[in-house]
Image (cartoon, rainbow, N blue to C red):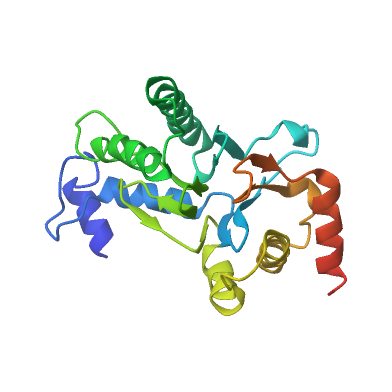
Amino acid sequence: MDSINHQMMGYDRAITMFSPDGRLLQVEYAKKTVKQGSTAIGMVCADGVLLVCDKRIVDPLVVTEAIEKIFQIDEHIGATASGIISDARVLIERAQVKAQQHQVTFDTQIDIITIVKNICDLKQICTQSGGLRPFGVSILVAGIDPDGPKLFETDPTGIFFQYNAVVIGEGEEGIEEILHKKYKPTLNLQEGLKLSVESLKQVLDDKFNAERLDAAFIRTADRKFTKVDKKELERVLKQVKGGN
């Protein structure tokens, strides 16, 4: 009833207008867009950091290999997103440029928190500027800093949090529950991948298969962004289905 009253009063028509109970309704709507997006999981493991996501293929004629849901920002940083993926692409391309500028200017790799803050600064501007709309996307940024693996979530408000394991998108509640029970920082990347695939399979529909999976990792030892190949994803999914 409250939301109906707000809409009648027009408080959801402008991003700069607070409702009487102190809410920015357009920003809240953007967060709901994220919850309807495809599921993405991030996980800090004992030997690196991992990103796994559902490509959510909507048409059997689509070339699945061409769907990119996990992006490389720099050699040691990757990202994935849930929500409006075109919004994510713009933010990630900006982050890629920022990483390259840092490399050229300082001759060192950029640290992950700088990338995260840069993304969040632009997101925040879009919550207080007339004529703009908030970015309807949450982005997981994962990488290896000199002091170890890091994982952050940025949401449409421009806020960010650091996590050991996190999930965004349509399966958020169910997978979060599984992660609370089964995630341990001592898991290696292989075990983390298996847990992520198992979680996606449990929460998403029966049609879930290797075609829908995308995954990448960065090992602490070599700090190199690496995509998990299709054969490995098929092997892990078969292992999960077999209950091994």
